[in-house]
Every structure is written in C-alpha cells, then in structure tokens.
Length: 243
Figure 1 (cartoon, rainbow, N blue to C red):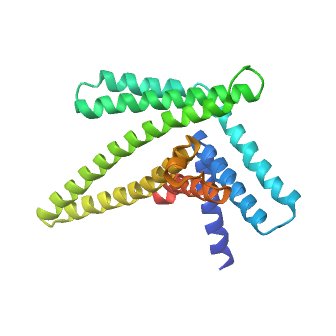
Figure 2: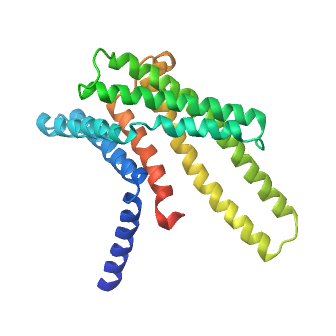
C-alpha cells in the first residue's frame, strides 16, 4: 500500500510539473494562488483574525497580480496575429470571421492597457491614470470575451449536432467510440464555459459595469472565489489525466 501511495504521488507530481513546464500553466497556477490568497484575506478579515497575518495574504495576492503582468508584455501581438489569420481565412463563415477579428482586436487593446499599467507601476511610464486605464481595458476584455463565448457556444452546438447524427446512425463500435470522444470533448468544454462565466464576472467588476447591475462591486471574498474557480477550470483542463 505504501508503494502504491508513493506511485500515485509521483504520478500526480509528474502531472503538476507537466503543467508548470508551460508558461500558460505557470500563469494559471500563480492565478490560483493569487485568488486563493485574496479569498483567505477576506475570510480572515471577517473572522477578526490577526490583521498582520491577513494583510500578508493581501500582499501576496497583490504581488502575484503584478508579477503575472510581466509575462503579458507584447501579448497584444498574439491577438493581432489572430486577427490577421482570420482576415486571410477565406474558408470561414463571414459572420464568425468578422466576430473573431473584433474579438482579437479587443483582446489586443486589453493586453496593451495591461502593459501600460505594469510599466506605470514600475516607473517606466509617467502620467498614466491607472484606474481609468484599467476600467477601459476591462471594457475591451468584456466585449472580446462575450464574442469568444458566443463563438464557443456555436462550436458546442456543432458537437451536439454531430452526436445526434451519430446516435441516429448505425450503432457500431466506431460510432460508440466517436460518441464517447465527443462526450469527453463536451464535458471539458462545459468546464471551460464555467471559466468563461467567471471571467465575465471579473470583467464586469473591473469595468465597473457590475455597479449598474447590482449596485456595488464584488467584495474581496466574492472576487477571490470567482477568480479561484476560473483558474481551477483551466488547470483542470490542462491536467494531463483529464485530457
């Protein structure tokens, strides 16, 4: 039993190191820690726990948030490339093509504002209104994200249609295998959609549109929980055992 336990630990550690070998994986691990720390700060504050301990979690969350911005420098170029690829794609549906271009440009604008905020915080850029820039950037992100979700639902609907078609045809082994593959793909896509919904809440909060909806912004506990769920959905999908 001890050998089996050690083998399982080694397997899970290998899965973890496989995830953090990639930049995206490390970023999502850091995001998970960032929002976990924010949530713990809120919980400890509500419990009237030692303030110095609670503030350490607040500092950890804030510090990781700023540190994650380093890897986003020039990330706008990736979105510009996506827009150019969509423009040059003559096989895609025209409506989806233009939506992809708009979404990519919105994301590019969001990453650009994120870069400005980071460079301002490390005193490279002067006279940057960080709050206004952040609000504007998250408005771009919200628009781009909603378009991504719309296109994503379209892809899911196509998978559902393929599944129905396979179910109505001959019930052979190949069909059953294809259905199982689609079911697994749909399961991971549902997890991904939950992550998108959490990201929408963050974007609504940081763009301050949420004030118009519920009268106030999310508190640290709500914000931390939403971000934590978002990071968890990505890590779950990246975890080798679930792919």
